[in-house]
Image (cartoon, chains in turn brown, green):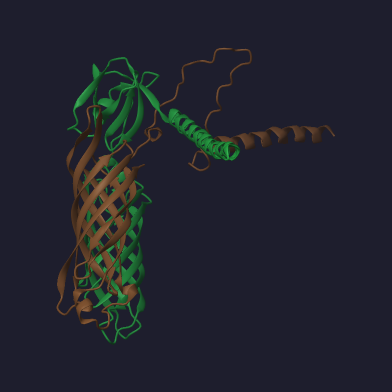
Length: 228
Length: 263
């Protein structure tokens, strides 16, 4: 009987040690959640809380707003197919205070060519082929950062920027390799919300009307973006 | 008549009032929540340098309009690239560059460090995201990729590409294993092996074409160049074998340049 108790008492501490040992080595290999020390308890009856907060500032604690996301709407002139409304979305990442990279998607629609209007014959494209969608990846640079003043008491940060890049345009039943470049003006309403005026030229090759040519498709848009 | 007026007008004005009040209450709740959340986020540091220069905007060209003296506390509101928006004790907000922010002290008196991404991070970084463009067997190709580094030498990459040619269009998806022999060099060469699928759609003007999806395998080599901050320039060559259902396999050569970020 006595030996049985002895075994029991030996087993208990071993078991307990095993458990605590597990807890101690849990983070040895970086697995499991990082353990944070429990917050120091304020003893009951202590009226004044200690004011000193010993917390270290980590970079992740600071709200970093290098990304800009937003939507735009405007007019796009598709060569030979008239001008139409264009709308889309844009996301940008600001690498330095000067450079940024951005990606855009947009959608517009081609109208009738003069040929189709004058001849009155069969249309060159079906309705779905007249839909124009594009995406592009650009690099931009704020060439003229500055401030804009409204009245005496208000100043807003702004920048004139240029951007250029590559992408693809789906139009007239085909995906077309597209080069685009342009310039824009960013007007920061607050440090996190910006208005954009943007002008771009999208160039792609098209051979729909006989010989192959490089079409210039000019686009002017107004946009709103939010930094996050 | 007048009675009707007294009954209708107050009821409409009451509903407008109720709407206004509810909007105001909602606005108050939201604003207080935002303020609370913001209040929690702000970190306070004290100026250790002789003074801290506050610019009107996040850039070197913006004029200095306010100066905080040594020993004064400031709140860090947010960061954009290498600039920090701070709030001085008197409520003035402005932008301070990283070099000056590093000469401030945390509440316990230790200097604060804002690690700028450098070449060491370029070597050690875990994740990379990039875009490239170039030539794929005479067609244009645009690619996006994401990479995860198992260790500084070996990483796994996932690629998606769009191919835009004169005779056919298509897309391609692949998984690569990339090996960097000297990951600590600023211009770091790498070798890559991978496999995936390619889908080609001949243009409608080509009569005999039909859509195809084939398996591909490729080997390649290239350079990753550390540019600045989190910015990488990359150039590479890949040789593809397309396992077609016809008698012969196709071989395609691809050249690409582009940029990427690590984080």
